[in-house]
Length: 304
Image (cartoon, rainbow, N blue to C red):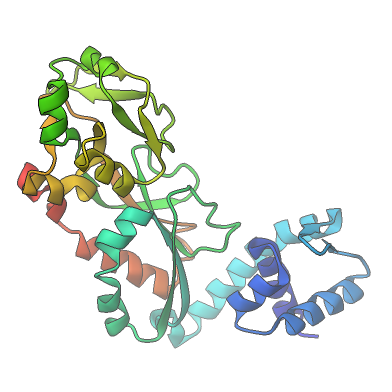
């Protein structure tokens, strides 16, 4: 039995939550994964995983082994990289998670540029607006949009995006334009359901003074493009980042509301588990994204 490979298979099964998904990540068959786990359990003389038809879970012995193996395998990979020319060669599958709207609008057009430069890298991209656990779910890199950064992983800022309140001209002609944050309580407000406070918008003056606009959401959505389209259709006022609302604002299908007040800017980050053990493919992707969004981002050009 190749113990190092068996250890790698075991930690991948745990991280991916199943034999089939681990096999996909390791580019092998589920049967091979099953064989490695069985041989490892026989070698160690203990059960490491509890299996059922729906899920797997670690035994106490499995959890203890997994905790120790993660650092061991990282150190092995680092030693191999230091002794091999592959340390500077990007190859293999690169699993990336990114927010849905940002991924479709701004990342999808540039992925072909990366693959043309690095044909040895196979991109595996998942778009989701929920905050994923990149280690547990097996992602190498996460593009995250956040005001707070990352508390548990390394994060490199790629760009920022301004946000503003906006609505369709027809809505404002019908309901009137609010002149103060308190006026929003009498308007139809469209809220982002993943927000920690979906019934409240923090708004800032240019001098930094903060206001809290409180309202009962007329509609909730977990996707910014959905909120934008609702606003364009005249359903109410939305708080949107310029990377989603920019084209509509330039076209005049949306107009700013309370323009002297702004929601806080948001950062667009590349998040990865560790700076010390960064693989060539992750390092190249982070540098590529930083270069692609260098300077004033296109979505903010018209709003400086």
